[in-house]
Image: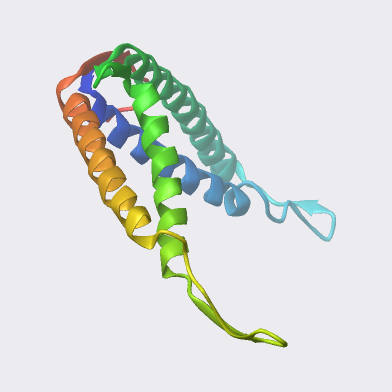
Length: 167
């Protein structure tokens, strides 16, 4: 079935489909395995077999649909431009910069005092803490700006996609 979705809706749909896959995977452990014979005599499981077939079909549809959604989102992210770069570039930049911010924030919070033989009481702290704080503020503003622009792009950009699963 053909659907017109914003990228934001596609991301939300992908998340929901992944949750359904997780639920089906969990159910596989209990629904696809169990007693089949008692004292050598087979136990009838026709209802289980039919139910399992239906769940397996649903699982395969979800795999196909999540793959299609990921592909469509990735393709759109490569084509859409935010601040002179593709959304794919900006997403990676934001991810890496957030990792850097975490490291910088941990660095300025870290303070140690040690008593070292022959030296005395030594205090350890980040060098140029004020400069690091300025970098944190500047990078945080840049990350928030780019993230907001990506969100706006996702909310306004449409993709067309065929899905087997009902949304």
